[in-house]
Length: 193
Image (cartoon, rainbow, N blue to C red):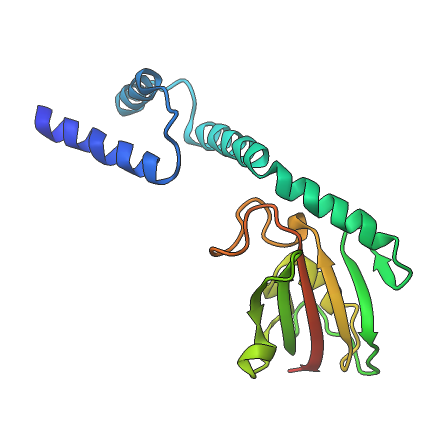
């Protein structure tokens, strides 16, 4: 049983390490582990999850502070341009072409062409480059898109400037979109399906 228990410890430690949690107090971890197995832990699962999420969010915010600052600076400067419209949510957009069709609702499906870049111009996704428009539910995408699409008449092409909290937030997405990244999209609303 001791080699089994030791092996469980190795597996748990490996899982923590793979998630970047290398600065865990092993003594406290063992005490929490033992207390939970005995049914006398001082916190419940919900409290434990909240504590872990708070810690991870704080660590991510300090690690990616430069992303937050760069995004805020970019958006503040961008807001000064006459052609840019800033919304209370923090979303900014610039009308490239104004359509005359209906505006989609959150429950609609739409077909769009889009071109997504980081602030430095690096392309991370583009239906334009793939040569094939994308169809999806309006409420099935990032918050910045959900808000913008409902304001866009069909036939419009807008340039969206999306702060991290309306994009992929503290998680980021894939290898290219780091946590707390401000994103830029050119979006052409082709039709409501």
